[in-house]
Length: 79
Image (cartoon, rainbow, N blue to C red; front, side, top):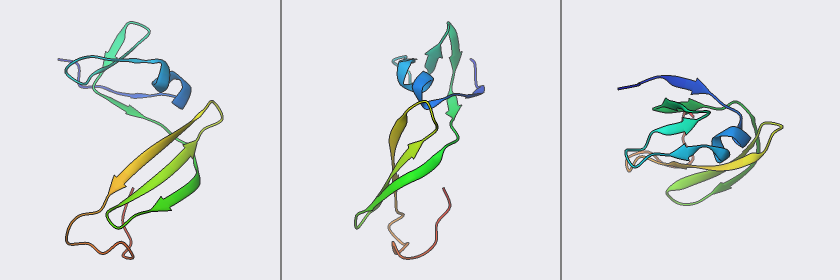
């Protein structure tokens, strides 16, 4: 089993294939996790989640972060 973490641009992540077991395949290489680095360009808050639009120069992607049931949305959280 390949449990590697691979740095990717958002463009390459969007072009990758996802296997039925949730692994990411790009350039014939399989990985279980990907890391992207970018700037948060926009946020949208709901009662139980944040949507973050992240841009890295190659493309943008929306990431949804859910709150824990015991944490109020106005409290700081790590992402």
